[in-house]
Image (cartoon, rainbow over all chains, first blue to last red; front, side):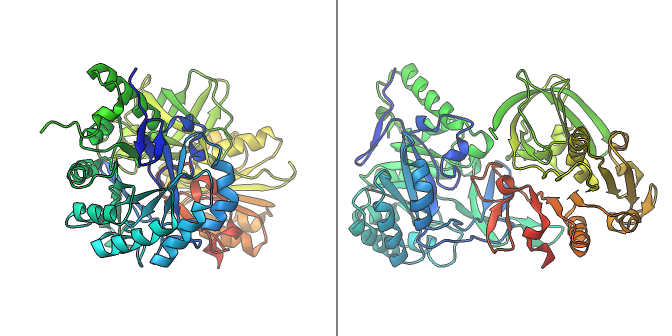
Length: 303
Length: 259
């Protein structure tokens, strides 16, 4: 039986399979369907220092092999999270990682400081790539200067594992990855959603209330895989790969391209137990191909 | 309530009309408790343009046959695919999801269940459960025309049935809110499911007479279990809540529709 554990900086994962922020709630939403503690980690819902109501309905449009969303970081704020949600999830036996968002350097820092106080949250994922909020979010993630500035500021106040989630909506993702690495990130996760839109032809209006939204699901996988591969060649820090992973084969592809761990996102909506199947599939793949550890898969692509 | 993911077997799939089918499903295990007004999420395989599960309200639960009934309107590729399911096919379903209708305080209350189009679907199961509880529910069903009035015979076994059709081909001509029964009788509670303009009109009628009214929403959704926050409805207090976990049944006073 192959070893499945992997490390993201100082963060130890029992296996490389985690779930993506915004697709898995706080984990407990999936309790009825599977043992969520079997996952290597759970990236919980995007959290901001102040509560956010998010964007107006409609926020979702289905596409072939994917969906667009424009949720807009609806959450009850970091204080509510700390007081009411953290006690519910802190004893789940896996890495509970909080996705942190903001609209200015100050709000990112304030949120990261708040989450840093929570003993059983071993890492944060800094979301500099949400396409659905007006001021900031993606604005930080699309320039090297903006990405560096926010990561440097958060690094100063956040001593635990700092993962930075990158946007694909850039000319060259490797520049941004290098910039956040230099600014002190322990790891990068990629890709966030790709900016897209959908039109209702009968009404001649956009489907989403925000006109544009973030595309996710199997349709983005080839783009995500390419970006993980390019980023793997550009940085030394570990990569968490995501974008359209819906089965163990997809997960292995991301690892071969250079991801140390992976996140399953939109496909949780289709099969809430997909995470377990991916863990078992990676193990079976390693055994079949003679890998003693899943770590040997990372970047093992032969070109 | 605990949620399940079940591989269910098709025991029947009848085309009720060009645009509707009644899909009946069973499972190896005894079907879990399901409340009227709750819904299920159906995974539609082999439909290339259908990615997400399809949320479908619970039309009826036949405990004797261990069957779940889904009344499906053929709207797009996913629901059209469901109409092709054959007896013996396996369908993956998440259930039961969301919250059901609120029970009346006493069995003596006059209850009116108002449905429009395929929105009549959850009212059949609700009517059956109410009848079991000793209530005498009345049904007001609205449709475009005669052939769009679905499961009329089944509703008639549960209580008085009043009908409106837009073309006047059955019952009174017009919309449900024009039906004369609303002027002739007093109701203590109203439950409604159907197109939003119809539910808004029903909710306004109920508010004018101070009748408690529950509406069942069908906002587009992805996960169905409160994880993605896509299906939100804005409440009167300004907050967005998930229709899939806080609803789909809401007290109409909580919604912004009546403002």
